[in-house]
Image 1: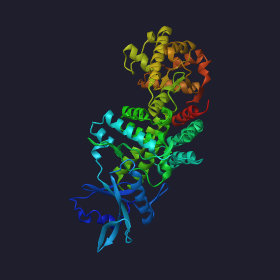
Image 2 (image 1 turned 180 degrees about the horizontal axis):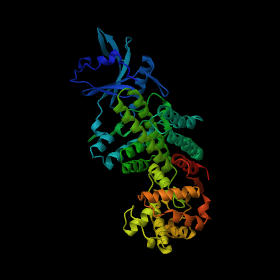
Image 3 (image 1 turned 90 degrees about the vertical axis):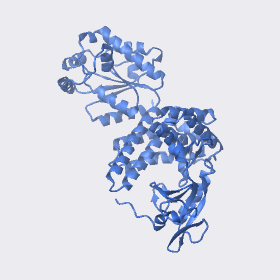
Image 4 (image 1 turned 45 degrees about the vertical axis):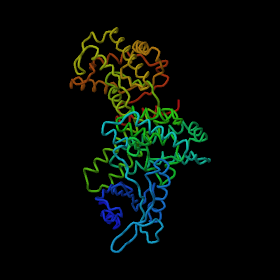
Length: 522
């Protein structure tokens, strides 16, 4: 798909002579919905004549109204930045700027002062100088802004505030075809539906308490500016759809939380939330912030997919946008796991049952620490993962100590509220007791994923693994046969929240079953 030709007034605005203040040069920035002309100390933003599922810029009159809304709304957080709306009118053989009410207007633009882009949170991060004080200044600004923002009342407020959360996943499924994994999009929808059902009462309470407000709607790190020696400001809020702005303050804040984590600065995201709370803001619990951060990542993924579609024949740029979309989908799933809360996930089963493969995939998706008995055993023995371990590593006493160590490591992760994924056979009751000893005061009911496969498949997998000689596991076919005969069934707390999972199905389906199990009411 070739990009559409620019309207003639856009070509005219590329000439420095078009502007009354006589800039030396014109710097055009283009997004998927607007053109922005940076001309010295000023900038002019023109909306593209497009209609999208979430946006209507279809007529010049509509675009003019949206320019007025943009100036009015953005003056709340950037009062000096947004100057006025101007008209673009025919003049001789070309075009010129005029007052917004000029009857000859063919287009409209927002006139702004130039943004100090080098002082945005994203630019400060890129330069390696983003500090806690920068993020804290923005957190205080947002807490004050939300405190003064208009409260959205009425019986439909919550429904309208949550509609975009589910709609974006339908959009992502449509625009992400060929770019993102449809299984991951479906998993995002199932997680979202489950969270909204389980937390409906909480969200309704927050709506009744006035937490749905007319906010910003697009709080990216690039939009938050912290000038030297001046007050911070935030620009470019959403004007084209009030539903995307009239949201729970947690959803507004979560966009910036997500963006800071996307930049690799989770500590800054934590500082932002702590400061926001200290300044009087109420973003809810960590699970609610993570839920809305997941939604925000999926919003950005959909935008990246739409941008990829616009790039037409530019294969490299399109591939980069599609890669960005996949990264954002994955980031959304890491937040989804955070929204489920820290927990102890035990992936167990006989040797060669596929538990390590599943645990590794779950750890990648969730970002949670993966604690593997095979790796811990080799580490304690001073061996590389691929080295073979001898019989002394597998005596009852040695195995008990490994499981106690697994418990200690899991307890440490739970103490940090990270959650943990523990991968071991757990096929003997004595091993479970040793693990619980290691957990100590962190003793909790584990979520157990018991991996199961037909014996013939277990033996084939063990033979193939032994022949390859690259696995951290020392278990060959003989070990598989012995474990089949000595397995102690899971009982008590180990069977209280347990999923018996077939691992002779594709790994994507295994992951989907685990996530659905975690999201089921219990």
